[in-house]
Length: 243
Image (cartoon, rainbow, N blue to C red; front, side):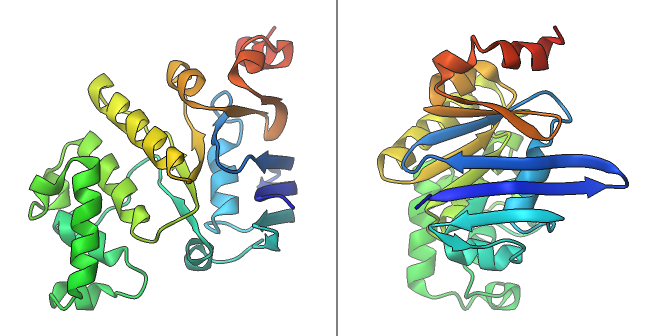
């Protein structure tokens, strides 16, 4: 039984096939990477498997159960967390309030009324300490640096205790010091049993961080394996360099 897999997953937009019969398996307990040239379908793939958009055809399974076409909140409840290329925070709310909104049993009205249970606040503080921004708990999210916002987004999805975490370009627009902090956090969380699937253009980060890498080209996976194999695969070089 696969931990997380897609079979023949397909989605087209206006006659253009963004994801084309993508069959992908994520290795449990590993840091998996998803790479490919711009426009190769990586983010569309993320959107399909997290319920942001529905596939035209194909199947998505998580822990052996089909989750194809489920809405995002059901995907999250199943144990799959996801960040976005551009962080999706509530900019005028504080860091702590963003954490509490992420708790699926809490609505934004409860958060604004400051009625969150003490255990939720304590758990939120634990994650904020873990990512190094607990001192910013009362700051509006819009005042954080972009790297700090990425850390806040990661911390907020951890409030749901996901088994599988999908990170969409975590190093994008982030300074090298913050990139290393994110990489260290991913390694620590992985050592604690969480599986990752990471879309990233920073090849140095991918090759040093990931155990297993899937390569997309024109919406289709063309190679999969350890970084050492991917770096020398002629199909991958063809996709990136065009021959």
